[in-house]
Length: 141
Image 1 (cartoon, rainbow, N blue to C red):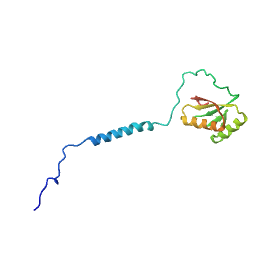
Image 2: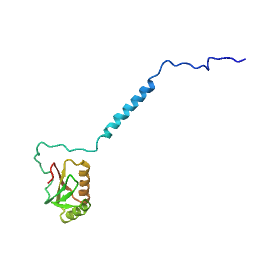
Image 3: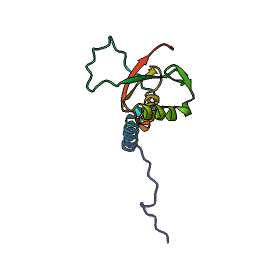
Image 4: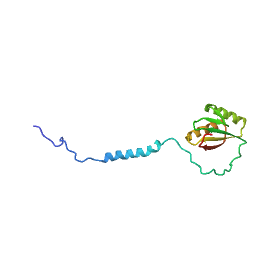
């Protein structure tokens, strides 16, 4: 004879637990809050100055200065002469060797990402130029 037990009978679940769903929602919210700053555009625009502040030189002014311009189309000019970007490090190194007290004024278009300025400053550093100034501009010149 076969016995019937209540253990093997299926029970109807009439309540749904929302705890796992709340855990999932909180984890998704946490991930979104952490990832949101990383999804922003990689462009960092420099702030606009109201008026140029009077500058007080902290070190002696360089004996001679040159102007390095980076235009909106990423073309580069050194003292008004157009250069290929690949020729820039050699030209700067040559100029720094001829005049050790050389100062460079970097004029960069303000709509370019800051990374282009950082790359240009690294090229200047590798060329041995330590006296620099940075100016942003809105118009092509």
